Length: 497
Image (cartoon, rainbow, N blue to C red; front, top):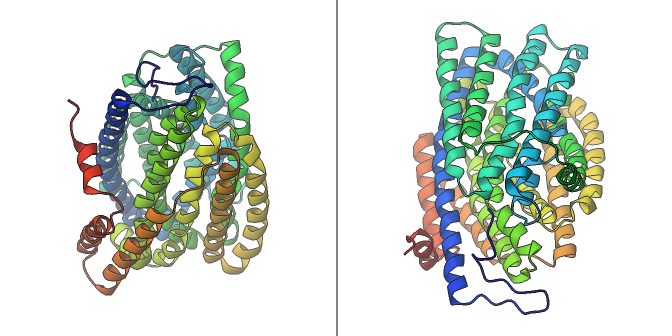
């Protein structure tokens, strides 16, 4: 989000900054806009998540465990490449569009051109290396087919960040739902016609194209351009993030790249099905911090340190509010969740989900404090965390995957995520002076633990009923423990006058 100086009264560096009455009203107006955008995002995410679960259900039941393992191997390979060549365009776009340094239209055009160029080169050529791997032929052709969809995913990075800064995330939500509708409809047709594995991969690519096409269509006209000064500014911002992301991908995706080399495709299928459920929680965390990053970057870049700390604390509390109960619920209902989503043949995925969901604890800290390090311009000082984590994780993967298979891969990933999250928190605290207050965090943990224990105690019970009971109990406990006050809820939901 870009806020002009006329929106909030700012002070000079030599003055003390005060939020006067009008500024406070404007500030609450911005918070309401964030809340309404959050509502759009949550509504869109609920629909797209439901459609995503339907897509997984169709694929698992149509392909079976082994062929779903083929899909998991192909997607894992492409996601490794995708993260390796991610370069951090989402957070860089969101951060730079929130700063006053460049013309926003020219900056967006340059960022989009950079992303398109790098995506075509990396996503078009690197996937060809799949032919050097000892995988069955259908996996290799699946990689080639779906590589096209990952070009679209790369372009989405810039477009989604653009809508984040405009507080127009309803467009992103509609686009995501549209893509999922195309995906589910196509998968249903392929399944009904018994067309097999590769046609499903084509449908996945078409769904991605629909999503990207809608985002591009709704954006302001984007001119393809390379501006030397803007290019230098982008490169200065992006290279530390790009290096961090490259090392990041070794511990984020190393398990999915290395596991198929030592395990059967059946075990890869069970592991991959659990991983797809984790992906949903990852999308929620990225969505939440993506909305708050512009506010954090805005406050820091203008020297509003008190406001910066408020926004950072809000990000930490909001992430905790959503992520911790997901962890508790998955621990309590891992096997019923996987059986409901993927079918009885995938009940064994519950054991992997119960371990993998613990990665969300590390991701909670890593996402919040990684974004803070970016906002304060200290991302390059975080590189040693990613480098050390990547080295330790790869060594551990090659030790424990041959010994323990998917269980070893899952536990190594949990350890690597927590290592990164704690390291990034220490780094952000040292450079920004922000150390999160843990009062609300402790209450959220208690509420989530009680909710998780209750739904576990109620088993066996219909999974949908269990989830609704869990949500209701958690909401009551959050209000009872005053994690969020009723007054705050009324202020956020009230309309601007």
